[in-house]
Length: 554
Image: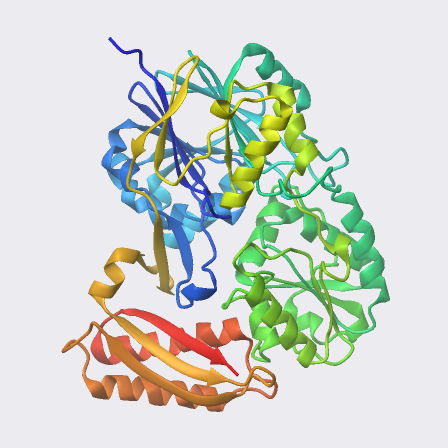
């Protein structure tokens, strides 16, 4: 009789950066680690978010024991409000994570009206949690760009499985403890069967700089600014928010926060004591806009060029309160996620057109540092815990391939380092690891139509369900409309009357005619096109087809 083997199934974060999700199975017990989102890439305009296909988990829901969260960034927790309803037959689902990650998830589930589907467990470092009959989980502190980040160890009779999450070895983190090297070494001494390692920064030699260098650069950059300062970063990058608030305060600037997700992240971090800004430094946006321009710092969402974020509206001159003038400074304290480079570049260009001085990594390298381990840190993790087998995760294919080469440089054989595909089943015994087939996996498209109104769309079903396509041509230099918009329907024969499309096209033209001087940022134009058309089509046809803006630039 064959001995039971552990199965590891990546459902996200493989061959891509984002929508991280990994399933572990042994003897009828299933654990899911992370359930994240991913930004749509350039060719997927009209899609709001992308989440993993968890059909396999839904089909085997009776085995699911818990969802474990490495930390509170969107690419690790953002899928929960959209996908947890698919698991409601097993609700409430136990969700384990740090106080900050759980608070972020609770807020998201509350907004979606599905908090009742979760049973929250705030974890403590070095404490062990029994999950089903065959897994025991332990959370090991690691350094990342958000406090409450953990590697997760799963103890089994075959040895430890260590899932690093996002990490680096930062000896001087501004918030939270450094990576717990002592505990990782102890786990290595006990015997690690498998390491799943963050690989996204494997191309970078040496060590990733400490977050402390960003504090110095922000202080210098904000101090040199003459007008208003607008700083954008990930909404959940609490470390960066803390650094920016303190730099602004030291230069006599009040700080206002614009963007719903950043407002929420900041509020939660303050409630939990991760952020302790000086009294009076944070003010509402409407108060900040009345202060002298050299006494204000705005923190905004939109560092990835997100179409609906505050910075996209600012770059398009459409923000209700914040206007950019010549002499103002905009700081991008984030690097583009792979696939978002063009969108971010277009937003930066639009801000330059409006007269801003724009600071970003290409001209000020330490305005942001990565939260991910570089090559020497990746090697150090391997030497620290000495796993028998290694699987690189969280990276595009080149990252995974380069990580395999790195592991082999450290002394691992080719059979010990497995590069997975999405949905592939990797089976492990005490002395062997092999592929054993695939499960249903891939990308599910999230179409957000309003508060608590979300549609999940499978790629394979889009053509069958029908699509509304809006085409237009925009002047690359000015952002002004050259031709269009033209609105047409594909695959919706007989379901939408021609006059409905004509009415929707008229409303879109009216909106575009109201555009501000300087044109729209590309992402914002896509977002508003989708919003205008979806509202009109639902009003007159009571349908919610997918809407794909196609915008060409000349």
